[in-house]
Image (cartoon, rainbow, N blue to C red; front, side, top):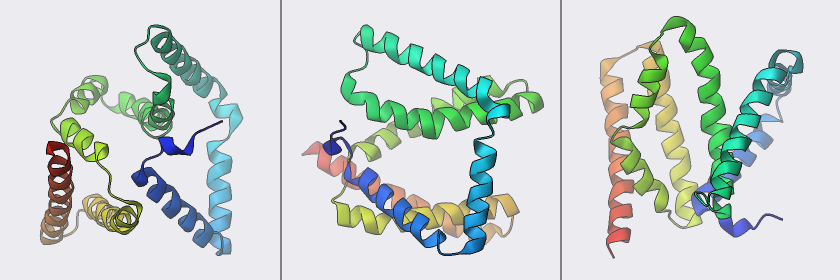
Length: 185
């Protein structure tokens, strides 16, 4: 049985907002139909059975070896599963498409994962606020991240990009500042 204390307040806030979003989307018939079509495409077993089986077997073998060698404690299982679902699988899917376009995708991907931002993300993810602050911060961070992404995709206005980036930097500095302040104590 899973112990719910393993989840941080940030993970609880994300789960609450995801639940609210799913409930809100389920009220619209068009969105419900679209979600069903996306789920059908995602679970098209004829297309993806071999690929997902191999990925899952590989991940299971690596995790088992690391548990036997006492590299990863059992308490890290939640983080491992979340990483596998939300980083590993999307990265594996995008690598297939990008390898066909660019032969140096693997090299660029590995180098991209060893940037300085990893240290900052570790510090920010290590420190969490109480649940109410996380519930308030999460929509703001999500909103400005989506705005920045849409602006980058549509390559709209440079002033808008600068404004959104400055807000994201302020939010990031705010989080880093609180995380460092809390960890120095």
